[in-house]
Image 1 (cartoon, helix red, strand yellow):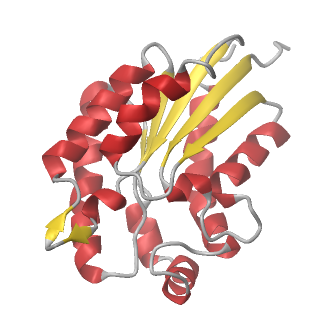
Image 2 (cartoon, helix red, strand yellow):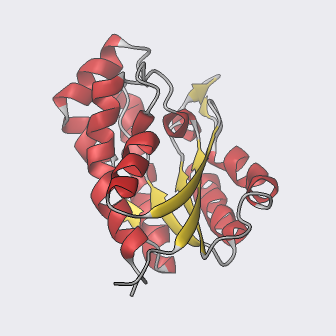
Amino acid sequence: MTTAPDVRICFAGDSYVAGTGDRSGLGWVGRVVAAALAGGHRLTTYNLGVRGDTSRQVADRLGAELGPRLTGGDEHRVVLAFGVNDTVLRDGRVRLALAASVEALHHAVDVAGAASVLVVGPPAVDDDAQNVRLRGLTDAFAQECAGRGLPFVDTFGITLDDATWRREVGEGDGFHPDAAGYAALAAVVEPPFLAWLTAGYT
């Protein structure tokens, strides 16, 4: 049996990566990492979630943050998860236009360099108009990832229809759930995350 490689992973994104609102302190990142560790993966993980960041802000800071963390180990990997803040209206305009969001994703993938990249799309929120914009952003991110041969996890459709997610987001600040909501989100991300980790193992 081959020993699992020593993998260094950075989770770069916004408040959902940081687990904002989850009183258990785990968020979806903590849950999928725990599942991977329980499955025998050897991981060193770094949470680079910043509340309020747009896709462009994540991409702009990514190089400085990856440099000191993706050293050593056998494999380097990056999970990118952002987009909700792009679709927030300020003074009647979205914070980041759709084309700029896609360009930010493109830039973030380039910054990741030789590291393997997994992209996790944005979840639904408690606002129907914003959800329309998030559906469009999800489709655009999925198309960009397909064009670059990158794995993409669509969380929007499932969270839009998930009763637990919608209830907790609605009872919270309209964006972030508590522990049960993050557990529901982690259940969406975990299978493709584990498959991505396993890819390339011998």
